[in-house]
Image 1 (tube, rainbow, N blue to C red):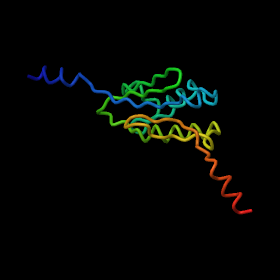
Image 2 (cartoon, rainbow, N blue to C red):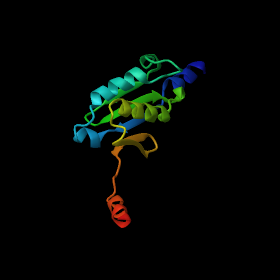
Image 3 (cartoon, rainbow, N blue to C red):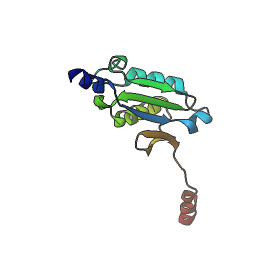
Image 4 (cartoon, one colour):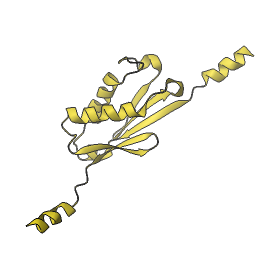
Length: 127
């Protein structure tokens, strides 16, 4: 009975969080490789950085997306990814142009602030 329990335990469920950077990467504003390195250096687990491998957390990237996979029992926070994404944008001086928006339950997307043309009309009315 004990062996069966450990076998069930060994089948781990993982939680994946995706950060979609396709808009800024297509415009050559953001470098996904440096963003991935930043996340590798800064993500904390139990209050410690550089503990990703020890806790089976993996960060993978393709051309426009970064995926952070973590064991479900670790309770990795999506909010931490938003915080670190915003800090990275601030460091790269892109925070005034890009924002981090939740596009689904387990993914974020970097989008440009939409500057509406309605602002110009309001100024014309004041004159």
